Length: 315
Image (cartoon, rainbow, N blue to C red; front, side):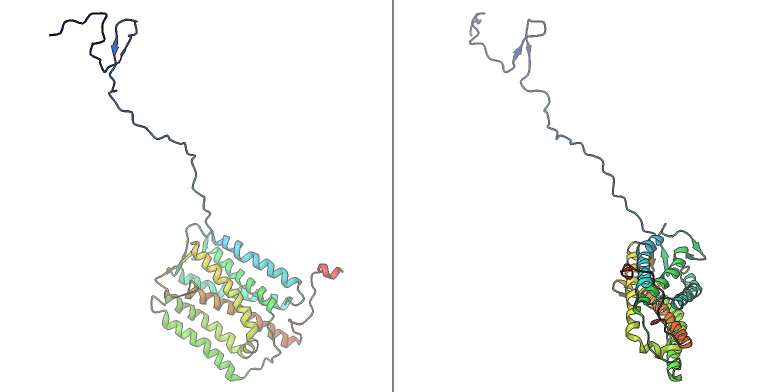
């Protein structure tokens, strides 16, 4: 058995794994364990992030569609019509435009107020200011702006021909028959849910086309090339505007009351609506001026009208 270890000789003393540090009073010792009773877990440093608000989206309204897509081309075409020597301008086309606007409001108001309550189409929440009957105020404004836009483009095209008002009776009968046939087809289609919109559109458009084609089909055929340009450009533009408005949710076309067929991404019923209404305006104003030309003996297309002076006039 080993003897006691001398006080001065500590070389053989068993080494402790616990370090010894002086206590706070300067004497004695405090043994600290070499392993802490907890394990430090590294925490990822948090980088402060700034609060970012979600991007604010601005909802388009029906009135906004008018301001963005109808008013600018109307102003441009009106300026061109009033200043270009080759453009059509004067009391005859402008009075014809006034008549078309009145007819558009009177004839289209019952049509829209018949289809909107059924749910053929409706308007996005907050996109219209107010309604009169079942139709928004902006829709009535469209009844005014579309004829203006179409007529001002018509002034640039100037479709005309030297034709007498006398038209063969067979031509008149064929024109009336064509329009009435469209109305009859519409009457049949309106009985089916999927063709409800299309049927009412044909039924609504047929009588007007019968009247126009019965009166001036021969004259309209004589100027068909320029008439095609006068009709195609505003129709295509209105198709584009309608497609944008539908994508933005300004108005919604029902899947229930439409066939589901599309033309350039636009419901076929909507495409036909803008084609037909453009036909109404172009054919109506063109034949109105044609009648006044034959009665007055001077063509509104070729007569010299006062123009706003341009910079070239001052040279």
